[in-house]
Image (tube, rainbow, N blue to C red; front, top):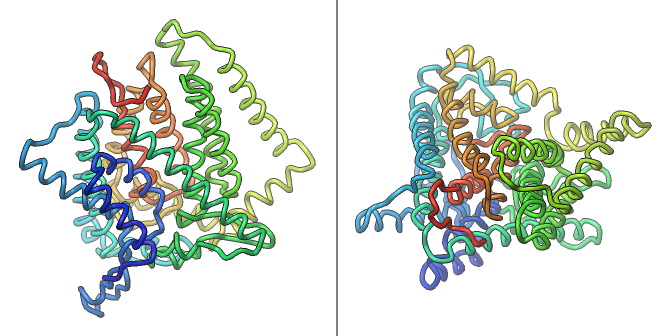
Length: 472
């Protein structure tokens, strides 16, 4: 094992928190989920499994390092005092457990049952652009099942911490710190590109498993910013989620000014990435949120009235959406916009064009039919979108169970008359992140997405008057 340069910075922070500020470990987890492409320690798997395994160097991410510490602490708690799941999330937790069991068992069994079924390999470089190959059980299946187990450990640990004093405030600090980190790293890369400064990509994207992807993607004089994530689509999805989350707080919460400021900064960072996935998710989520709040007020019949700031924020957003659609479809600039988004940002700046990506989704549906709805096992097929990957890997049962978990969480946010600021952020962020993942991100265990799922679990509204772990 080799400690990386990034690890020399992250490990002391992790050790310091474990020794002197353990209550901040969940907040550090929130920051760690955005450090997707970094490696704390590199492990040469060939030394452990032998050169015949055909494996190289594997990087342990900050998220996995934090999760390992949480697992040890959780084991100690389990032995001493036991664990408990809050009442308000037990339904969603049951859906999650059922999904995890189906997905993990499928990862072990289904690649063997349906051996030979053509799939796009998960571990192949630019696998979506490569021809399908016969599926067989591999380390990819084991890793994906293990990653799901890691998420389960993290979720159970943070739920045990949810009733600690000031837990909500610490989590908000973690969310803001993660956003600031992404904005600062992305801004530096943009300035480095413009000013000729040295890029910090090798520091933030030092994981051998992601370094092959190349990080930033550029064409002509345009740079798509990826760091600290591995691809621009991931970065844009994160910033689209935080943009809508903080704008919801600005429109309907209590802390208007700082939430509006964070929302605007997130939007600027989203534009900086030039990631079409995040752009599309932000536009669709903004439109959906207008209808969501209107339907919520109508169905619940509460006494909340539309405040002036709510009206002007959503009028401005609606005007921008209408202007964007009109510009894109009805003006002389439409062809240029289509070419920029469809060709420059997607087809020509990434390996594999849109037709090839669409074919992976079509192949996903074919897999569902060929396997009678069972799928080929988590970690087997790489489609272009989350939902296509979900149903083709975990089957119809896995997709239904995962959707049940999401709907169980979102419904509690929807039916609660009065949400705190952080609850507004958590609910809207989960919906936006799910939309962004569905549009163009295939990774079922992406820590960034699961980070928003964790927040939705933590701050899920309670039907009792008990105080929620919220700063407001």
